[in-house]
Image (cartoon, rainbow over all chains, first blue to last red; front, side, top):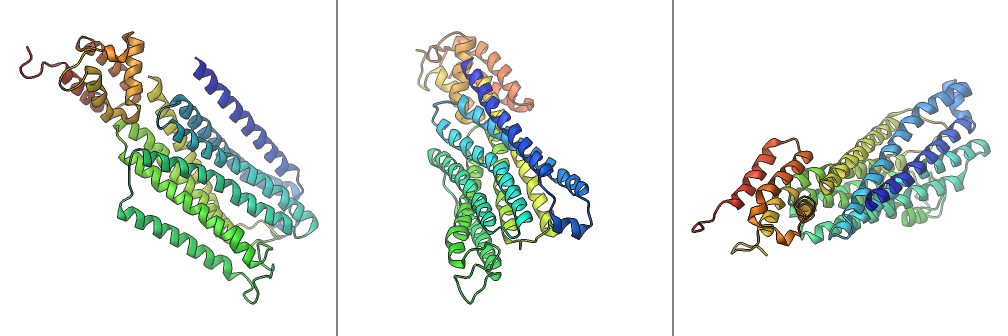
Length: 311
Length: 88
């Protein structure tokens, strides 16, 4: 009874937060002035521009909803297993997932506000820098928590990676990190490392130390967590438990890969003064959809696990 | 406490169930015994097995639509109720 009340309160806190953030974002997108460069490029009126924005914003808000739902369900499951040996790991996993859910609206709202300020008063270097760090810090916290949880689960079960697993992790990490550095630093002024004439508006050395390396570190933690939860879900005992955990593992892996892919493509794009419709934006939409499906799978898995604790 | 050379009946039920419910096993069995048989898990006896199996089957049927898994699980539990070699 008490646990049911706690669960209701938890969902009760998460869902109103989501609704408030979604409404704030929707209102901002409708009220903030249209991007002049985009209006001119595509020959749009301000109303047409805002109508187009709504078609982008609504699916994005729906994906946030799935993320918050997944967070609420995972938290409920973690609470339902309380002080059991794996309870702490699932609580940490839910907390990391919560940071991921919150990171979606926070980064979108921050980006929208600073982009709008830039539209009104010319290039907004401070805004770009702040948005870059917000995009970095929230997933860094989320992946660190998720990674700690997945590491705890496999350590407790004494599962170990095979040599092929380790090779796979290294190849993923190297491919992501090296190609990212190659693409990022191609656009830099190589004659001096102190020039800020680049898409980050910061000297190359500062970008390397405070953006590039932390981003690659975050992705590595994320990739490792995806491998760890997959390993745990495949090797843990219990056919029915494995099936439920498999949904969480699949969903979490999809969310982590989509977030890394999204950050990757967003970071290597050269900023334009207007909203561009190109191959990169199509790839970003693909990653958003992938994240949405991932959040859905996590929700389904958490509900199945919780049902095991209820019957 | 009910016990034999292979451990108590509760331990044997947990061992069989672990194949299906993994880390959730002990909590699941303890809930079935406490809530439906109104006794502590360590007080479980062979005489309770049939009744416990009914509750377990009802619970597991809510977790999966795969009747093959449920039947296989029940068959494993049924074996625990059969007399061991040399037992009359």
